[in-house]
Each structure stands twice: as C-alpha cells, then as structure tokens.
Image (cartoon, rainbow, N blue to C red; front, side, top):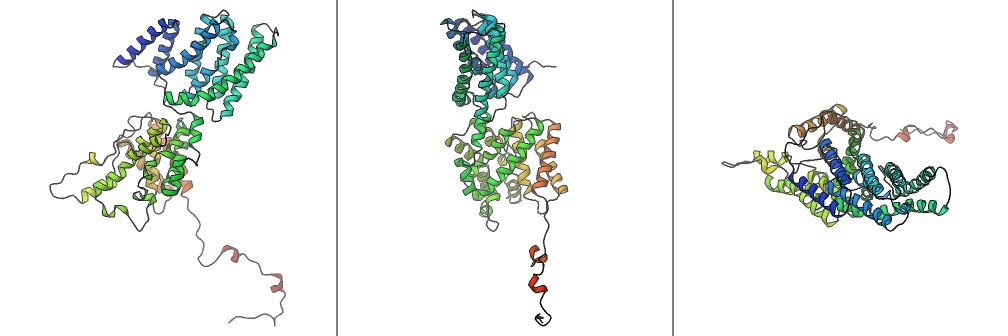
Length: 463
C-alpha cells in the first residue's frame, strides 16, 4: 500500500502551479500537463529508483516534442515529418526506465493528436514509434544500437502507415520520408545525448563505457603513480559489478564508479598501505591526528580532481560517499593508546565527513571497498576465513549506520555477501607449492636415445 508523505512539499506545489500557468500561456492542453504532474507524483510515491526523473526534466522533454510537432502541423506539413521517436529514445537512455518513457510517449501522443487534422494516424504513429524505439534502446551500450533502433523503427512506421490506409500503397515519397525520419531521429539523439546528460546531471551506459577506457588520463596516472590503488580499484569494480547484478542495481555504473572512487589518493599515494614500501611507513613519524587528516583528505582531493578532469557528475557520488561517515579506526585506536593526561579524543574527529551512500550502487562500492581492504590483512586466506571476514565487515557497516540512507534490504546484503565470498575465494585461492631446487621439467625428462645405447665401458660413473 502506498503511503502519502507526512510533510507537504511547498516547492513541489509552486512548481506544479507554474507548470499549469505555463501550459495556459503556451496553449498546451491542461489535461496533458495534469498527466505529467500525476506521472511525477506516481513515481515519487512508488519510490522508484529512477535517476534524474523530475517534473522539470519530464516537462522539458515533453515541451520539445510538443513544440516541434505543433510547428510542423501549423505549417501545414505532413505529420510524417514529426520525429516521434526522439523523445522516447532520450527518455529511455537518460532515465533507464521503460515505465517513464512509455508514459511520456502516451502524453505526447495525446497532445499531438488533440490539434492534428489526422488524430487517429498521429496517435497510432506516435504510440508505435515511441513504444518500439523505447524497447530497442533500453540498456543500449553502443551507438550502433541507437542507429539500428532508428532503422527498425522507421520500417515499422511504414508498416503501420500501410495498415492505417487499408493496405493501400501509394505515393512512395511518404515511405521514404518515414524511413529518413527514423534514421535522422537516431542521429539527432546521438548528437544531443551528451547535452541532456549534462543538463540532467546523469550518465548513460554509452558515456560510462567511454569512461571505462583505461587510456583515460586519470586511470593512466593511477597505473604510473599509484599501482596498488589501481589494482585495488579493479578488484572493487569487479566485486561491485557482480553484486549489483545480484540485487538488480546498475552494474555498469557501479563498476565505473569503483574505478574512480579512490582517485584522490593520487595526490599522496605513498601514504596509503597498498602503495607503500613494506620497509618504509610514511605514518611512522606522524601523529595519529595528522595521519587521519592525510587519509581522510583523499575524498576532498578526489572531488577536486574530478572537477579538474571534468568527470561525469554521476561519478562524484562514488568519490564522496565510498566511506560514508565511517570511522578511521586504526588511527583512532592509536590516538587512544597515545593519549596524554587531560586530553580528550573524540570519535567524531576521526570520522569521514560523508555523506552516507544514498543509492544501491554507492553502498555496494562502499562494502566492496571495505571488504577488499580488509582482505589484505589476512596472511593465509582460506574459504572459512574469507567468509568470516566478509560477514564481519558487512555487519559492522550495517551496525555503524552506513547503509541507513540507501535502499538495500537484509536479503540484498545476504546476496552481496555470497557474491563477495565466491569471488574472493576465487581470487585468493591456494596454490600448490613445488619442492625447492627441482623443476617439473627435469623430473619428467626422459633419457635420450644416445644415452640408452651406450655400452658399459662408455658409461662413466661419477663418484
């Protein structure tokens, strides 16, 4: 059962009133505007985890198709020139949700049909084009997928037009118009996709895969300056991706976010254990308070690097939230051990600034980061030790309240634990130790034919 919000959001009410006023001025059907408002309220009440899906974003997409379609119709051009598939494809790619895209398609189809001279044809073409293109680009990871969706959508629109006209085939230029419409629409989507990603503060699968290129300057710097952190990030990425698949989260986003979550360590890589020389510890001559500041500062420095290299805003959350407000336990314990008389060591001073993870993806990266770091403390990892460690780390994060603001359930945590245990047991499996001083090849080497035919007097016996 859906629970109504306890508090009234006055900003939302003002935004809704402004939407109705704008609809009246722009001569948009008020029923369509009401539909958009109900859609946003429906998504909010259902608490769907849909990125960047807000009333202003939906309204912008709707106004684009409305303005374009009304211009074409009022210029007395054919409805076949209306690019019905652009907005549904953009909505699916940006929001990652068929539900939002299909409802937006319905709203735009009703709006365009309401003032078109051919309401039935307009409605059918808009619904068919929007529905098919939404399904075809869902989860797209390649630009070619969008082009292919445009071509298939154009062919289907031609079939719909033939069926509408009772299988009468005439005026071939109309079918060519529909075909070019589908292809040009897909090209436009590719061209403006990055603009809408910036406006909506989100990332599509296509842009995320571009960030996965290991030739990215930040990843190249990690290879050269902080190889231990680079290797750590790769393992965290694999753990996070597999765990996200298990709980239905965005696996690609989590993997790319894990690659960049520790870029702040590039400023002082030698102060982090994975990059340190075992014989030299940079924290040996520092006080616990100073060491804590150096360690915690990698979050702030990571945000600065992300802005300098213009990383996609979707990755900022991973850099900022991958520790939540957890305790820097090691240096907190050192501070307690070295406490002087009348000195007070507050736990709050040894906690990261946060915020806590607010999505499934950032929470899973936090857990994977903590588990992988703890794994390096095991001297002789065995399946039993790995299982115990994984459960201990996840339980500690849960008890500490680091997962309070995300939507992970206890059942999800069990699935994540199982994934971590399975993968880590494969990574840190035991290996056979061979006897020293002998090689496997020498042990299995057969005597040569020449040696086997030597006579007794030719054979020499070594004392």
